[in-house]
Structure formats: C-alpha cells, structure tokens
Image 1: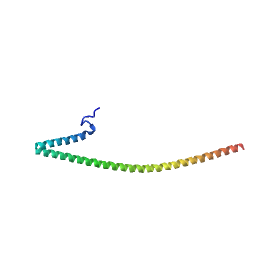
Image 2: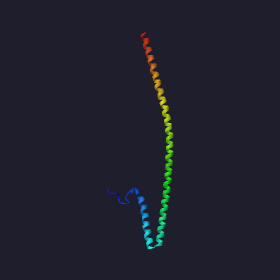
Image 3: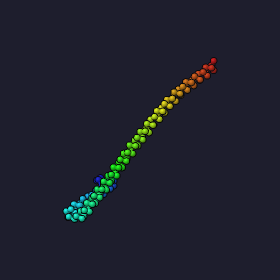
Image 4: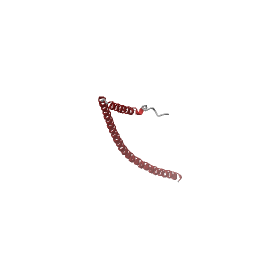
Length: 125
C-alpha cells in the first residue's frame, strides 16, 4: 500500500489543519506582499499572530499537563513503595508464623508418638 494522501491520517487531522492554515497564511502573505495590498497583508499578519498565540497557549497547556502527570506518577510511585514495604513486613510476619506452626506440629507429633507408645507399653505389661 501507498501511504494515505496528505491530510487523511486521522490521528493527525488537527495537526494537518493547523499546518494547512499556516501554509495558506504564508502563501496569501507572499502574494499580497508582491501585489502590494497592505490591508490584506495586515489582516494576514494578524491571523498569523493569532495562530502563533493559540499555539503558545496550547503548548503551555500541554506542558502544564505533562508536569501534573509526572507529579502524579511520582506520588503513585511513592505510594506503591510504601505499600510494598508494608507487604514485605507482613510477609515476614507470615513466614515467622508458618515456621512456628511447623515447629509446634513436630512437637505435637512427638508427644502423640510418646502417648501412643506408652499406651501400647501399658497394654502389654
């Protein structure tokens, strides 16, 4: 396949519109400068300034959003680290409890053997 024709990439429609309007303004501006229509030229300069200002505002908004998101990511990271620390200490507690259970089961099994042994011993004597 061929790449889609200029201006038909849906993700970039907005970008293409902006580029088109800059292109139109520049073309018109050059034409008017040649043909010496100062009024039309002034109007185009004004459009250009407006477009530039809009781009500056958009850029500011995007940069602000980036900072907000970076801050949110950092906070989330710290939050996660704290939870992981808690989890780690909980796992340690659980391991200790499991170890204790294991020891007590062994003790219980030994006592059970002794009881069984003594019961059998007395039966036979």
